[in-house]
Structures are given as structure tokens and as C-alpha cells.
Length: 322
Image (cartoon, rainbow, N blue to C red; front, side, top):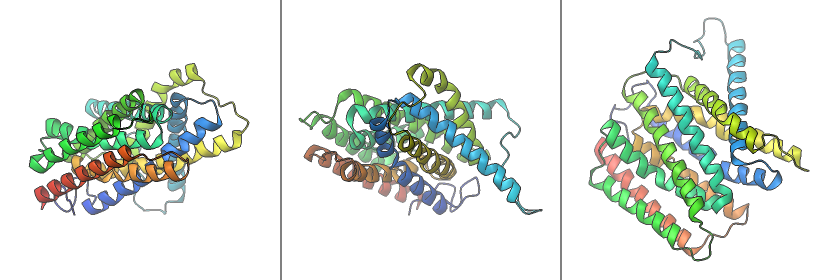
């Protein structure tokens, strides 16, 4: 099993094995987001900016509500619940602001890619390209070198993306949607490298605090764009839309993001991005099985090459940290 360079436990005190489990859980729940958002789009006139805004606002509300409940239920003398506003040096403020902006771009570009090119393609491209961007970013910013196995993984992933994008003659893969998915992947990679930098530098940043700040920053940034796009849903299926928005806010947001930040802080960035590739698998299954999207031969071939890249990168990370 891959481990971090810090040993069996990361610099933030969380065991690496548990960090990998947290990342896998976050990836599995994120895999349901595309299908839920596609159902929201088909049931209302909400656009990607409005959905992103409501995801952040609702997720932040649930996080703060959960914190209040924990404070209220906490026995006397128990370990304190993480504070939302600890001492805030400039570097930590920049970290939280940058992470919030990266996540705002990540999910908004992904939500826009879903109607542009479909849930399966948008998710496979986003999460397939992310390990490439993460590996390159971690090498450049953190000195986490790829090695020969990692270089092979990057080449295989790029080949898989080329097959996926260029090999579908039916028009199911659209360049504009793929470009949005690649932008989403780049923003996701930046947020993961930032989270890993926090852990590797020894800075103790609560995953709850980083998540709450990221949601708050994202909501503020997206508010004017959501208002311009139309922030309120107009639909004959309003109850369905609200329930779907609540699901997106609760499971793949308020639950998944703290797990993601906690895991990303203790697991090597490239390894973490590989673990997160559980998302396109679950998303593709939902898109084909639930939404009726057609999984073509080029999509299958591209996915197979991407999974080969995952195997190469996993092997490279295991060899490096053994």
C-alpha cells in the first residue's frame, strides 16, 4: 500500500492508511455529484454557477450546524471542536483564499462540462487529467519527483485522454466540454497540491476550518455570477430540485470535503490523485446505468488506458515509499 514520505503517519498526526481511506470515501461520494447535477439541470433552469453557489452555501450551513451540535453535545472536559477562526497569519489567509478560489473554479467548470459533453466524459476527463496535473505540480512545487514509473503514467494518461477526446466520431465528446473538464482538473490539482503543502510543511490546519473557509470564499466569489445567471430555480418539480440540492450539499460536499482535506494533507499528492480516480468509475456507472448515456468503444478504450496509467503511478509511488 502506498505510504507518505512522512512514514506511517502524516505530519498532521493522521495515519496514512486512514488518510487513503478518507480520500477513497470522498472520491466515491464525489462520483455521484455529476449524476445529481445532471438531474438538477434537467429538472430546472439552474445553471452551473447557481448550482455551485448553492452547493457552497448549503454545505457551509451544514458544516456550521454540525459544529454547533458537536459543541452542544460535547461532554465536559472532552477534546475541543476545531475553532473556525484561529490566529490567522498572512500565509494561512492566502492559503485559505487560494484553496477556496481553486475549488470554486474546479466545481463550476465541472458542472458546466456536464451538460456540454455528458456526465461520463466530463468526469473521466476531469479525474483522468487530474493526476497528470497533480504529479507535475507536486514535482514543481513540492519536489515530489515522478520517476520513470510516474513519467510512464503521465504519458499513458495523456494517451488515454487523446483516445477519449479524438476517437469518438459520434459527437458524444465535445471539445468545449472537454476544455471545461481540463480546466476543472487543473483547479482540482492546484487545491490538492496546496492541501499537501500544508501537511508536508508541518502547518496544523484543521480540515474543518479549511473546508469552511473554502466554502465561504467560493460562495462570495460566485454570488454575483449566480445572481446574473439566475440563482432561484423555476421548475414544476421544485421539491425534487431542492432534495437533489440538499443531497449535493450534504454528502459530496459537507461530508466529502473534510475527508478530502484530511487525507490530502498526509498522503503524497500524486498518490492522493490516483486514489481519487475512484470517482470517474462510480460516475461512469451512474451515467450509463441511471441516466442512459451511451458508453462507446473509444470511451472504453480511453478509460482502459487511463486505468493503466493509474496502475503505473500506483506502482511508482509504492516503490518510492516502500
